[in-house]
Length: 267
Image 1 (cartoon, rainbow, N blue to C red):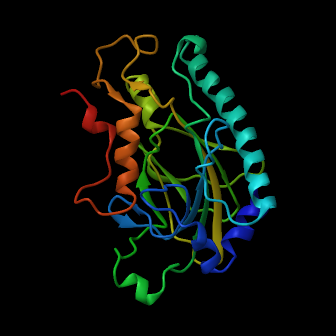
Image 2 (tube, rainbow, N blue to C red):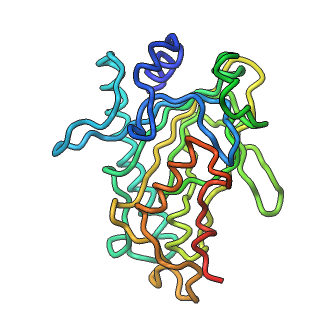
């Protein structure tokens, strides 16, 4: 996976833009994503597991080795994600079989590359939002949980309610687990989604690969009494409407920060 990621991002821009994603085709390469209305200093490649009953919705470069490596990585990550979710539920004393599950069919993998310079040319920068002060601005992940593999460059930080921003230093042979917005709603705030960001790299670049383990396509997000019996803190809403709003925020400044679960909180 690391070899495929580094090989792709080191390719000429014209090669990468042959699989450029759009709001109609939200998978593939992108280098101008917005987070919190600010442009991140990063390049990404997004893909899903092809569904056997439908044509492949992914955009693949003309490199069979690249595609095969990433599909193998997806399958392995999906197994680990499900095992991790079972541990999360067990920690709350609940039987995972009776609770909402993640779904590999809605989950995605993202290859991240954080260059030390703006990936856009001077001409391209004239018609788009300027870079913010972070390589990736602070946010939470919308799904159930995220498995994150990172290289040794560092830069990842998470927000602690006690200590503010703290580093998440790379450690060999480890996977960082971010709990997501969906799990926060299901657990009625017993578990909190991890607020995280990436500081700019001073030289070279940074590579990371998150596996976003998402709810089923028709999932309903609402507090579950199996996880917390206190008064519900969120109204019921669907995964479909939530993730659509988050995706739309990636492409353009809509005049407000990206959709948050706080918007579904009961007063």
